[in-house]
Image (cartoon, rainbow, N blue to C red; front, top):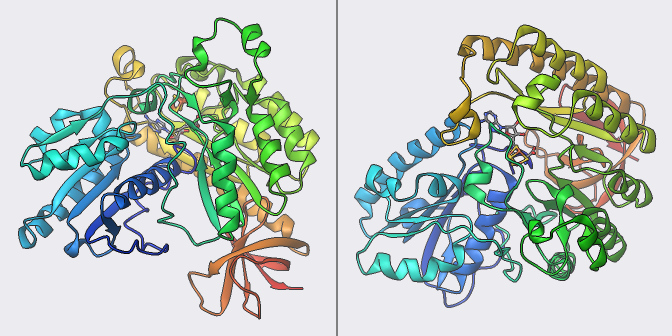
Length: 477
Ligand code: SAH
Ligand code: F3S
């Protein structure tokens, strides 16, 4: 989700936990790369195809249809997908009736070029065209290549109930907006996911109700830019001529949506991602402060600590405005955890501008961070108008420097929990030990503790005795 958190290259064809639909005979293998929004989209695709007779499988060799939901955010993400296509090619040699489709951002970016470049691909479908999959599959079975990459101003898949593919049965993603209108100069998302639109609150609340009936305990409201969520009856927000026109409608903004969800589902933990500093207003922070079930954690990507770099990136705020927002969040919710996305080596980044990023890190002391070297994306305003002039070695050295500072702060924040009791939602067994549970606290810090008679999905109080650089270690009290 983008950010959302960038879980690039990690979300691979995970086992399906929901029941298989009786009577379905065809097998779908679906893999997702990139952001949480992609994971959620794959769940929407599985739901659409379940009505077409497909159950999901995690054994690629037995699949009738292999779909890969792709990411274009950095060049490396695209290379990973190309590598996977080679793997599918090998499988297709054993199972020639298997069809292969490419979904998501690479499909949208490369369009028909995909069919030319990758002979193995039968089907190319952009993020707004998944409802067309049944028709496209008919084309494929008639022996024709099929493609739909039309972006929509309306599509939100609001009425599709996602099949929870990657779920631990405890936390789930709920999409609330699609697309992005921001046009940060480095970013491919506005081109691959189209214009921003918001989903009707009623269908969001219905989806959460279903999740709560299925015993889910935590939801994450997803969007490229959740703070610009605005529902006033459908279509593009930008169709309104001015703010007062919006105000005259019974519009629902993000802070209101958050409150609606918090009040309607007091037993569910609520998270959200991603916020954009330019659109985040303090109403959201006040809503977080007011409701115990809204997690005290904000992911607030900034990309750079330098006002001049932010300007070149077309981010609509200065370093000082961002610092003011951070100060306000800390004032209203002192215990709030904060995280960042940062990018090193953007076009023209001087050593001084890089120092500004380091000093912003020191100022905010984020709990977590997601840091990247700038990767030029074809077709973006930066690729068209600016020179990607920072040598890779310099980008990487600067990246290593900011990662080092972030690691120091992450450890510092975890250490603050030692000697305290925190409420943990149990998500499953610890990866490293079968006799320990793993879960997260409100601030999104991961904790492990010895198993007792609790079960997955329980909220428990854990006394934190120690920590590593990434994990709290404690015991239940
Ligand atoms: N909507 C989200 C961003 C989605 S992309 C937001 O506003 O934060 C997730 C992250 O990927 C971005 O925050 C940025 O740090 C990184 N990213 C985006 N484009 C990139 C590029 N061209 N090169 C390197 N990193 C990039
Ligand atoms: Fe990309 Fe900026 Fe939107 S980073 S997703 S264009 S807010």
